[in-house]
Amino acid sequence: MPKMIFVNLPVADVAKSTAFYEAIGFTRDARFSNEMASAMTWSDTITVMILSRDFYRTFIPHKQIANSAKTNEVLLCLSFDSREAVDAITQQAAAAGGTADIREPQDMGFMYGRSFEDPDGHVYEPMFMDMAAAMAAFPDGPAHDPA
Image (cartoon, rainbow, N blue to C red; front, side):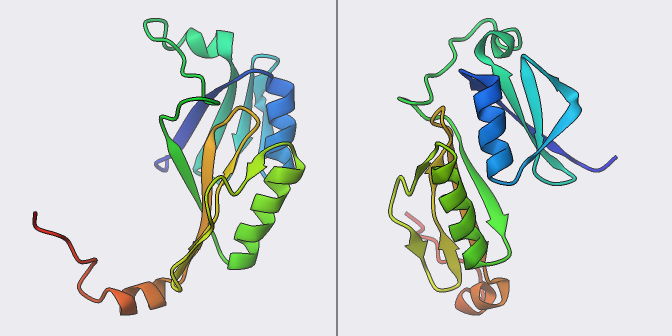
């Protein structure tokens, strides 16, 4: 079995969140979905599990669930093959009820990124990186401040 990641996110409305994720290119896996959860596949090894807040609470009963509209615990970066694909998913997110460009787009020449929030406030940063240009810019790795 390949190494996989399942990102579990609590949401206010599973159906609304499922529609949002489908609109930005995820695919719902019906085998692992019901009224309490949707398994939203991004790739063969990455799935975002959209869980109702009540269902999510059954996994973490000893902690409060963060209000993702007011606080942030994680930033999810998604890689793309082009700048145009980064722009497209950001625009799709806004059209589907999310918020695009919660900060200024980042253009470092070799790397380009934007940001968006889903309807529950979970933060994503789609990005494109030209690996050859990045390696040329940092042949010895990024500079580090020893302090």
